[in-house]
Image (cartoon, rainbow, N blue to C red):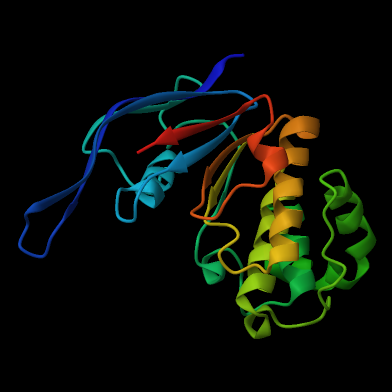
Length: 224
């Protein structure tokens, strides 16, 4: 396997209102190989979510490097999908379920066109998601996303991430808003994504990882 992600002597500090630095990550180094499932482990406040933000290019390291196939996150061509911890950050709440999915399935499609095709694309969306053993059929296609529960939004957000066919999937507490059955289904989707589609997955989760995922040959944990 080749290293898709390399993190070397990574430091990051937030800046307080007084201008003082608040260190979060100090000298972090590790590699992630293509096709691995890596769970990031550590206590609250240790910088797990911050690490995902840095890998996604949303933040800039204070020192050290992050490399995706030899390039920085902001220059890398590695397709990344990032499911953030807060469900509202993963969806467009002013659109319907169908419009969100139609837009995610073709990121170059303008919103206006997505609105026109939303009610014609359910079968196509379900077919695309079926390779991950995932379905959104239990969600009402014309329902406004802003009226969904947190768990429904998170499931929709995951579906939208998968529709982009990512090489690297970042998941920040993905089961936090899901019930037990849907959490089990999510871990099955993660395993399918890795085994069948070759996705590399970084997972932050305080919840216990499904035994099938934890026993996968390419699963490992890294402590922050």
